[in-house]
Length: 332
Image 1 (cartoon, rainbow, N blue to C red):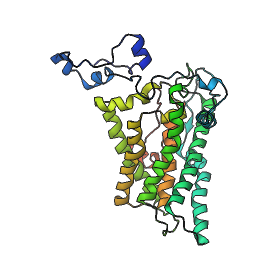
Image 2 (cartoon, one colour):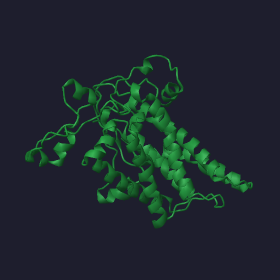
Image 3 (cartoon, rainbow, N blue to C red):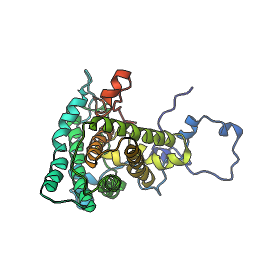
Image 4 (cartoon, rainbow, N blue to C red):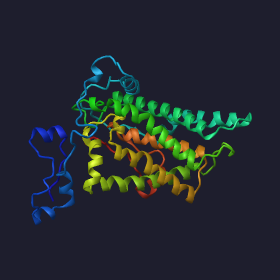
């Protein structure tokens, strides 16, 4: 079987004269209809200019930020990414214990502050919990982005021959809007399905088990959706923007069109949360801490970091079965 490379970017497709528009009147030969799914998917139209993000051209960061969106993205991920250069030697390891040790201090505030409020007779309405959780989640996610930028300086990247991609000019406003929107959408899921103002603030001894099961269920939803995006033509159309970046940096985990965002940000977490509440109900605090661990993995997986990083929540239970999930190099 011929090994197929990654699809060309829109700019490459245009420059090579590839016609990305389907001709409705042209007869399709039996040989074409019988082509393997793997071959068909890479021959599909890639990204047309009418989509939100047409290419990865990025120049906006070369001048001082003059809009709120530019200022937000500059603060979230500084442009001083590591210099280009191959890294040699033994692959660094960022163990699950090290990851959890880094995250643990940031788990205190979302538990302690609501607990103290309840102790002094203050019950938070749902809108207040959404606001508090969203603010903390955004702060945590920003810290994770900064962490992996620093680790990139220290350890380098798997593809170190070219600079990391920056936010494209056509996506600045969009990503600045998506970043807080992701937080609000995910917190609404937990607050509406789990949080009750009368419930006590508590964690149970089953938190590791619940976090593990939630992650497995979420992975099931995500894998099914993601595999389908590379097999089904109309799903590829909403997923192709995410593959415009060949050397992603942490913030580009958000690079997507609206269709993909709805599925990843809303439907997959919604399905996982709903099923978990039927299988092994989580308290809101358990659910929220699990969300922090999930977003840590999402950002790490798009960093391109030259390191072996196992998923903190699932690796320990799965390792005895030889099925530990590692955050593989996402460079495409």
